Structures are given as structure tokens and as C-alpha cells.
Image (cartoon, rainbow, N blue to C red):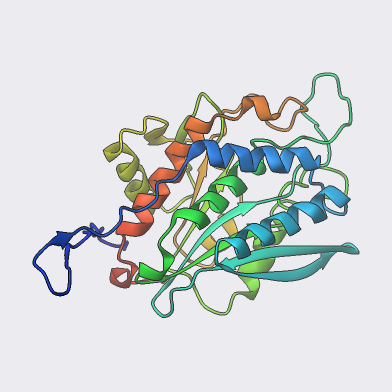
Length: 298
């Protein structure tokens, strides 16, 4: 049901007029420190609660970084209860072939409802929100999208984190996107809460387990111990609307993060090494896979 992996080889080329062989440049590696700086940029804006200035500026920041990295950057506007919301989409330069989507939510929770003190303050969202965005934006810098045999989109979902609050719902942006997308992706990978120094990424229970196994096997090959190939929680996250449509989708998430939905979800809790484990795993997996071999959604 899922693709066989292929290893990209960098072929030596002959210099015209001579016999000297040169190797193609090595690919640029995902850098955890650069990704953490992207987390810091988002946190510096303030809580990215939909409808706030910080949320709007976070969207503009994402679009600007996508454009600077050479991706086509688009908005998908929608409304909920009078609020103007927007998903953000980065499209790589590759043309033709199946579609693969990486997703992350860029909003942060309006109220830190798990604070013991019950402050009512919004969540800073360093790990829950900013870490997934940072992984995707750093991948936008390092992925050789023009050399891929498929189309890759980076989708930044709005309004994921309002559920459980008065008048709020979960995963609004991904539900809207999944309902509106005009073709079925071959696979969807959601990245959420991946910056904790004590990184523990288990198989999320709702996820497509065969697809998850491929990603976790790639992490094991790279020596990334934050990926733990054991069953974990069942989580309502941005991968679920795609699963409901029969699309293979997984959620890469550390749900044992102790500062989830508290005012302590701050930049000091985010580890560059953890971001790098996730980013490099995805970088290698994406450059090795052959989605043309996938049968696609049933």
C-alpha cells in the first residue's frame, strides 16, 4: 500500500574536454539551529491566536519565507463564525507526478487551560505550533524539490487549536483544506509538537501504520532515537480529515510534552537537536521515496 524507498545517488559527471570526474554537490542538510531560530521568530510575534495582529504577521512571515526559498506561496481564505482565516500553501517547483503534502498548524491556543493557576492567558506556542512550522520552513530551504519525482506541497493550517473552549472547534483549517482539495494526495504527513528536548515520538494510533513505519525506519537508520516504534496515543489532529477521506496520513507528534496548553510552552523548552532529528528524517525520507509506486487512496 505504500511506496518502496529508493536511494538517490549523486552521479559523477565528466568535464567536457577532459577525463576528470567531479561529483555533484552534496545536498544541504537540515539544520536544527536554523529551525530553532524560526521558532524564535514566531514566538517573538506573541501568541498567534486567530484574529490577532500577531497571527496575521505570522502568516505574512510564513509566506515571505516560502517565497524567499523559491516556492510558490498561496493563501486559501475561509471563514468561521465571522472570523477571517486562511491556510497557507507552499508549492514546490516540480511538475507532474503524485502529490505529497507536509502539514503543520501555525496558530496558537487562545487560552492556557491547563495552567494550574488558571491565568486565562494565551499559550506562547513555542512547541505547540511554532515547532512544526519551523520544520516545514527549514525543509523549504534544503529540499531539492526540482529533482523530486512528485509534487510536494507545504501546507500551514489555520485554526487548529481552538477546540474545547467556548465556541471553539479543533482542526478547522485542515478540515476546510481536505474538503476543498481537488485531487487526493498520495500521502499527508503532519508535524506537531516536535521540539521537546525529551523527544518521544510514538506511532500515533489513528495514523496509517505502514506509512508511519517507513518514516520511523528512516529515523532508525539515521540513529534518531526520538522516534520510538511503539504504539502511542490516539490524537485528533490535522491528519484526521485526510484519513476520513481514505488518504494515507500520519501525525508526527510528541504528546508527552508536559507544557502542552500552558503558559510554560516557551522558547527555552525547544531543542534544536530534536527539531533536527525530525527535519533530517523527513528530508531523507522525502528524497528517497518513489510515490509513483503507491496505489494511492482507496
